[in-house]
Length: 175
Image (tube, rainbow, N blue to C red; front, side, top):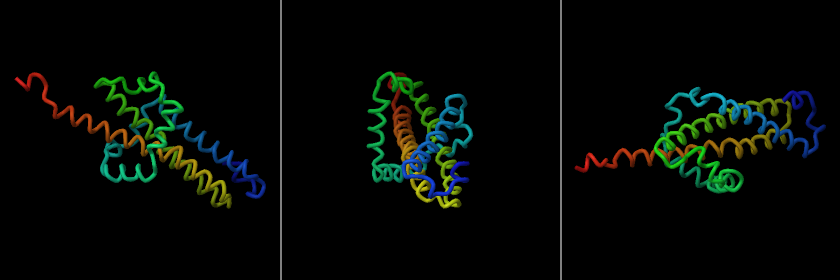
């Protein structure tokens, strides 16, 4: 950000502007990801924030923005490995609670990064670094907004499973 503040827009080539945009997204998102590994950062936002209030809006937005393609990309790159997926969900009830916790941790990290990066974009606009601002916002949308939307989709599914479990009669109730 200091470089962007001190250097004139005309002094950067397109590749340098793209690199600065990418690095800014990577570093800011990385800071929040690292904090999420060390601390329960999801608790910084109220419980009410994580409740899904408008399921249809999230599902429609996800379809419109093709979040499924983003999800498939993540599966190919990292989450396709069974070992990686089982660290978050092992198929048990406690695994479902862990998955819910992990979605909250991930969502907090991405929403915090999204907001911080967009605040940085304001600085870029003040300094007339319009292309860097556009590139940074575009990358921020892909690297942070899409994951937030994906985590919200995951919590919709988690809530559906929990509601099914609540309605399912146990062996004692059947007698």
